[in-house]
Image (cartoon, rainbow, N blue to C red; front, side, top):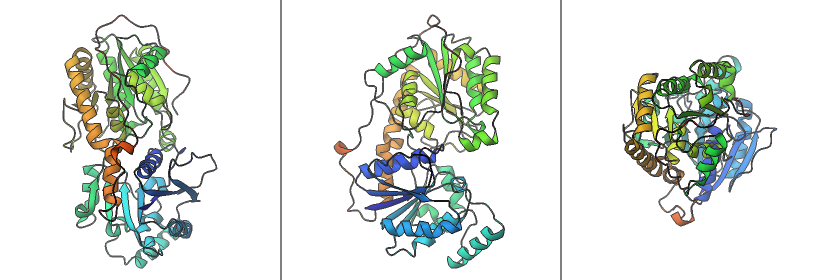
Length: 445
């Protein structure tokens, strides 16, 4: 099966869609598909595709680039086109929202699948962009075209959403969308280091200056207000008197577009750490490249993770997939429309967004109740293996992509190995460790 993936982002672009595209292409290729990725041209060196071709030829994603996209699609001669879509990664331009219409003119008409990374689409436009959109809508027989999504919802053969709330929102614009849609959770978007004997855990904790019995709480993910990062800091400050061996490990930086919009946010977080007297207990990692091993090493060093999403946890949160793939107990926020996959005190501990007092109580319980930690660890691993591992996500994606039931997956024994997870020793009250620097040489970006 020939699969052409279209995504404007590809490493080293600092956006979660970049590693998502690269890793998805890699795993589809490893499962037997012949994969080509069409992406944006960049002057910076790009990594080679692991088992797939990278066509970084798109100068931009405006109307003038449509002929280039059409030629590249014809060149790759796909059986199926998979568009990874989110409005802002295409500069919110409507051109790519007419991809199903564009594919009608190819010499061999492929199936068109759209994977919505979130619900953001193109923006209302004026001037020449508006006029060209109107012409495109006329050519696409305008009825049923939604201005944010063009013909993506109406004319695609199938839609992939990363969570139920996204699919519910999208289904409002097209009748019968649920009949040709699938929810596939976000997978872990980084390289996971195997640590079956706990060697990586011990080395990393020693390098950071942690004592064997320190209780290390990690935050993992991008750093911006919608992530609710300040709640982690407030909760750690409230839990510290009851868990004096608590240490805070902050893993992640700010994506470029967020850093420009709210440039003082990381500095304000650091200032709050100092105000709460947590400077000696906090280590700031900064951004880790998805294809490097640093982030995975740090997560192996942790004993629990707090993911304080401002709008509650959802299946599209790739940070949850990463953390559960390491077998970490997860403290996270309860969404108003919580999906059935998240079960309190089984694979998550839930608190309401912004409620640092309850989050602190969760941390105290995890630090002092080994049985609860072990139960959450078991639940995290079960979720990862059954729902969000690359094995599971690749299988589900191929079931959507393949045009006929004769296409089969590569046997499990030949697929990429699933990493083992390091053991987590009991945590007891322990003497204070040696001082750790409050900041690292890798600042937040």
